[in-house]
Image (tube, rainbow, N blue to C red):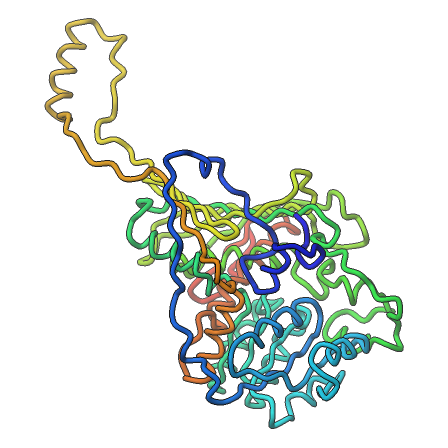
Length: 467
């Protein structure tokens, strides 16, 4: 899987707009079948509510790749203005001015951002281990928050954010943008309508085959303790001597990130929970290891997990398998597939494919080993029970595609966020949703490292035990 920020292509352009992850989907071979029907999805809703009747003023904290991508997308929404940026590396502050003007206020101290009366919202694009602290401080200072995923590094921090969100009344949205995808909205509609029957199984894959995809991010030549506020960066993490890899390639380390599970599985669980209305699994088992990217990292480059979802009023009991392989010699790929009793639903890069395959009412015959008289007797009763009747047949496969003018799910996510800020509407991905998406992924990391099954309470949002 190529990193879209590395390749100047249609794929990278769509990534900038936030469209469905970081790589093109693996498209089922059946898409080529002659019987396929296709339709284009309509946009989810009108965005007139976000007209520029007044400005929403944005500050970015953490001006790395995700922070810049989020901000550029946010500024595509009408009525938004960039006013300030914060980062611990001098070069990124210079880059912020290059992008958004020399008059932009920049600082290495995020608290200065929070004291500014001209800041309405902050985009929290920092490392995972800073998400809770900065988001909490921002809401307590009266700022609305758009926080990158995973919402928190540790489950207990998620409960803190839920509490602070309720206490302050500020709008808080997690930046796992699939929750606002037009494709996901259609999948939810189809599942609810019974288009694939009763859900029994789901699988999700997020594979990559590139250095950037494996988090080997570039390190600027001037990186040093003089240009980076290393001590502040460490925060609550273990104190260490200056290490540029740990700053610029932070996803590779448990001290600051959450590995494959926190970076990628959160997207996959967000997708699944949005479609099904699920509160989450109750049991997680994971495996994997470090196969190729042995660069000093302490997280795996191959991660496999099984999530058991109990029956609830929202959905029947089902199982989810996830896979992320950063050593995929096949070139990488992305796919979320829901399997039901009467069909399956596959979510790709810019399309949704539904295949129907209902079980026939008649179970079929296996009577060739019966004696002739028993065959005749059996057939007589069989035809009474299952008389032949002609039935209408619909298309065996339907493909839904995004319209050409679709700006992507990250754009839609910011539209929803700003609509909530302006009109006090509920967000699509609040702190409770965010914890229910990232909590099970922390269970997956625990399971992998401890080689144990980990139990999760999806209602109380707590890790129960490792058995």
